[in-house]
Length: 393
Ligand SMILES: NC(=O)c1ccc[n+]([C@@H]2O[C@H](COP(=O)([O-])OP(=O)(O)OC[C@H]3O[C@@H](n4cnc5c(N)ncnc54)[C@H](O)[C@@H]3O)[C@@H](O)[C@H]2O)c1
Image (cartoon, rainbow, N blue to C red; front, side, top):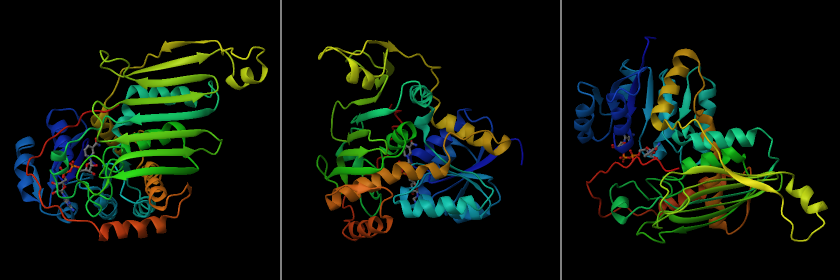
């Protein structure tokens, strides 16, 4: 292979276009964007404007067979991610899948199992993992210094979207086209970070409200409650209907509490804070001589390395992995974890009961097929395409 990884982009909409722009702005030094494929040829004009002369193909298959690429980014609507990943791997190409890894875990399992039989890289675009706040928090949690996690609570309601957003694409917010709403489109990042930081839960109970704030058939308001194997509990609350929303992550351990939030209306940046306790909370509960005593400790702001490379960081790590075996930001197979939580959350909500993991993936698939069968085609779709790659913490 040459010194650069030759990359093709499958699907040049909002996100595919943003990947091309990162390249055109010189931010991907070990990558050469050589080709794009899109089933909608009107997308080629923008691709050509960003990367003049780039090869354009009407189908992914033609791009795979072109010999112009060593790797591809799959930036199509979600259902196509796993089948296209398998086809690309079969053609001998490395794969970067956009999030989510797929819509249902059965199809992602197929892609990750197939990838394991090849010597090619299967990676996933979990760009929020590059955020210094989450990286630092993971380092602190993994150190073991603060004891086991007792509780985690994430309020991630700053994914506000208008009806115009939902009307901007025929696939958006439909069971047939997208396979879900806020959990499949906006929250794969936080669902991944949740499991990356805290591990996988063992039980999931959820309430997913469909079309509560928008004229859509999928969920736009969700509350998930989980339990972990060690007895810890967690909640995850999300919606695209709140303005202003919030993005507050709180993790309580036996010897510390961590918070990532943007505290106060005048503070624009999110920060990581820790309340470090001088002794174990449980030991204090068991042995304190006063009923209203508190475990001594203090709040401190945690400094980080300040780096937040997002999509560029994930792509540069992908190239470095292919060229020199350096670590990826996220392996493709890790994509199944956050998706398992959202699939289990849907199943719990639809059946009205708690789901124990591992879940019944066949049942989830069957119920999803019923949703797809009842899915209504959109009558109004605006041609307007807006790009908002806002990095939500
Ligand atoms: N990582 C992130 O921060 C981030 C941000 C936005 C979107 N995404 C993900 O990127 C994906 C695309 O989202 P978007 O907002 O760019 O959608 P979009 O509708 O703007 O673009 C999708 C493009 O894929 C094309 N397409 C559909 N099926 C295809 C196929 N089989 N072969 C080739 N092209 C095909 C469409 O014609 C369209 O041009 C989604 O899965 C989304 O979750 C990720």
